[in-house]
Amino acid sequence: MAQVAIEPKVAKDEGKTEASVEKISGGHLVAKALKAEGIDVIFTLCGGHIIDIYDGCLDEGIKIIDVRHEQVAAHAADGYARMTGKPGCAVVTAGPGTTDAVTGVANALRAESPFLLIGGQSALSQHMMGGLQNLPHVDMMRPITKFASQVQTTERIPDMISMAFRECYHGAPGPSFLEIPRDVLDTKVDVTKVRFPQAGHYRASTRSLGDPDDIQKLADILVKSQRPCVLLGTQVATCKAYDAAKEFVRKLNIPAYMNGAGRGTLPPGDPHHLHRTRSYAFEKADVIVIVGTPFDFRMGYGKRLRAETVVQIDMDYRTVGKNRDVSLGIVGDVGMILKSVTAAATGRSDNGAKKRQAWIDELHAAEKKAYEKLEPEFRSESTPINPYRVAWELNEFLTEDTIYIGDGGDVVTITAQAVQPRSPGHWMDPGPLGTLGVGVPFAMAAKFAHPKKEVLCYFGDGAFSLTGWDFETCVRFNLPFLGVVGNNSAMNQIRCGQIMKYGKERGNVGNMLGDVPYGEFAKMLGGHGEEVRDPKQIRPALDRARAAVAGGKPALVNIWVDIDVWAPGTKNQTMYK
Image (tube, rainbow, N blue to C red):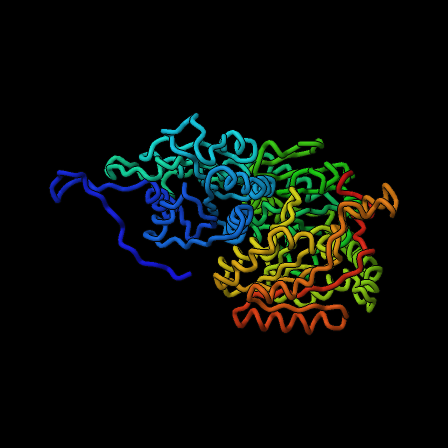
């Protein structure tokens, strides 16, 4: 979609002279306010309530990417925020347009991702009259946002937008919502009566260090520890704390595990990077430091942390000590905290240093055993294709510049056993809400944000089917990414639990899908597509897809995988424990 240069539209009051006051519409105020916040793209699906925003975005040079479902618009705005470190923005119409975006907003809240959703609303003049697509959007959005409000006057639009973005960064980041009625958007007002907050001049620094005494306490704990470990979570990415985290683990000689967007902080092969022995470490460590990850289901609500000393570092006060007591909690910017602890501990007498190295060596030996146990499955020649083989092939295929996205249930869970991003900021997953369907919108946003990087998304076939039609949006906007579908014709993670609970006869109810050749689907939408049934053909198909993407075509490789192979967590149903 080509950018269009259009001169701003200015209205003059009737009967006034040439020097009359300039008028500006609400939609154009929205665009100016977004531009001031650094927004260079909105993800949207059109509706009559919001079209004046489009007109304003054209004047301000803001790209408009229109998708096929509002959920995709919200997920894409979330993905854009994760990829850029800037807030994202989605614009949807009233009623079903806004309710369709609810899942994307809720997903961003749990994933701590900052974006603004702007929703339409029927005119204020039609309040309580049953206007088209009128719903209590603000009431619905309030529990799943950090801020939700209606804009009631045109003059307040820039002020309210600045307020919404500011609230996105209160504590741990998250989404905000603004409802703007149609007549508020369409009304033209005297531009001299509008306050335009200047981004950068109304936000306080959020880089809080925490209590200096607690920084010293943590340094003391780590200097004395013999078997420490650290988990680097999503907030390492949020705070762009990759360098601080690397320095922390290397100078203090601490083994590190990573989850969420923290993956890739340390590259594969780094002596402090551990991957497959987290449970082992959590069982035997004397000190565990959890950075930017809540004690939710992924952490067994804190029950899996066996150490005598557990330290939690987080941006949000409400998260620290939730579900499990901690020995020490520090609230603030995780990068600033890690950097300060490193400085406080560096150069001190460290009686545990030698034993810490022995501890790291012990963990690496356990890692080697874990890999050797999995290696036969990684290199399996069986057909249907073992999903572990797909995971191994994907990891071998990644480059330093590949952004990896996971969107699915069991087949994607299996990839956690193998796939290791090569660089910081190159991993995306739904986050703790476990939302399926994020893959295409995340890929769309990642490719827009980083057009020169390769974007690879691995889908389960159930996940791809939820938002796969927006593969065509990627074709239309020249956002080529490489998609891979692990296709077992089932919602297989749920199927496993049903079989275990009710037996095979009833285990296939409500979770079986058709045998869809998604490679052909991709071709139909104007992309490159392939079907793979032989494990030896996985890499050649990926190479051809990479070439197609380099040539400007989105690609989809549909790999038919064994329906009766599951991840250990799925078989143990750990997500419910």
